[in-house]
Length: 150
Image (cartoon, rainbow, N blue to C red; front, side, top):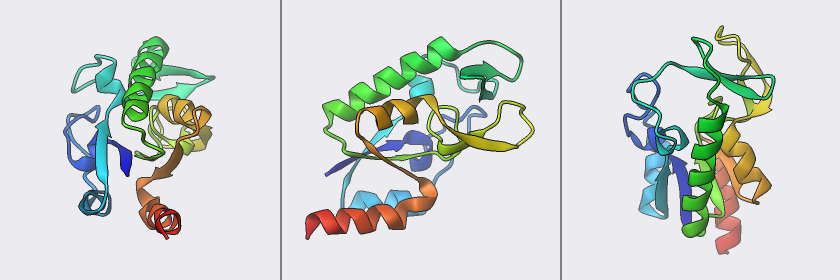
């Protein structure tokens, strides 16, 4: 079984600030499953580091006001291609991200406030039937995978 995973969760320095969100629980899944790294923002050709971005009114804006909606959509399409080429039925995506957040994202004010919504890639994955889990839901994913494998 292959699982698409936000590359930053695997320790790749692809975050907007050139850091990562390395998560040991996510990495441990690699002992049992093939983890397929994706970074929609890198796939879109956005630089590292880059100005942080958030979604407001259905569009993605950088903190300095640049509309990056087209780039985020392009990166999402490329991430979906990678996930589908690898037959990923599941994804572990970075919570709250404008690309990968699922259910809750930053509200577009760059204040740290959250709102209900999905990142651009998470929404596309959802529309294509890929089951999405945030990095805080690894146990829930394991439970679901164990049920499938029984």
